[in-house]
Image (cartoon, rainbow, N blue to C red; front, side, top):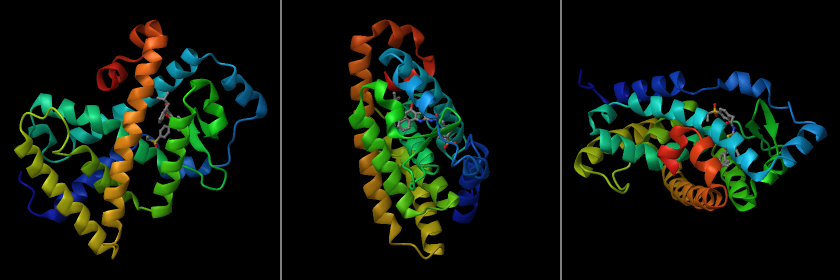
Length: 244
Ligand SMILES: CCS(=O)(=O)c1ccc(CC(=O)Nc2nc(-c3ccccc3)c(C(=O)c3ccccc3CC(C)C)s2)cc1
């Protein structure tokens, strides 16, 4: 059923976003002030590097699974070749998770939703990648400042995923056609919300996302060198397939 118009495209992407958002906004808003106790923070900080990496990788993979589901429901995504779908998810899924997570970032106490409560950067100390964690927190702070609506986030994350400039695409032209439709949807939504000025800010954020994900992959390579056993046999298969 071809999409009759841009309104239908937007409605379909917003619905898919809502259906695959993993946690509901109201449920996480209710948890906003549920912080880890000093003892709980101590427990995280006394985990070994590989224990904490494994703990995070499992949670991150959970979030990524919902993004895979979201991608499959973007009109046109399933028409792409398997290879191109995987190529887009390999580079885009972590970026979408970061945008989604920043929705629940509490800018008043600089905490992020993790393991059922809200965690400050100190909780992640034993990961031994303070620069990545600091960059993720800064990004979340910047995203919150834009005060995007759920509809704007839905179209923005669809555009983050459907990017014809990604490496190793077989049929770039086909991805371009799907991307152009999603771009029309995002500009339509921003125009309707009288926030055309947000568009260039969102494109700037996409550049930050790419550097954040490069940093994540760099750290993962560093980690896999030092803890090959954990990385190869204890990480979730989807995490390895998409990021390793
Ligand atoms: C995403 C859908 S959602 O409904 O919003 C949602 C649903 C579920 C949650 C719970 C959750 O999984 N939170 C995690 N937080 C972090 C984290 C960690 C360090 C700083 C900031 C957030 C996770 C990570 O593993 C992570 C994320 C980004 C970069 C790096 C890492 C760690 C490395 C070792 C992979 S998992 C949160 C949000």
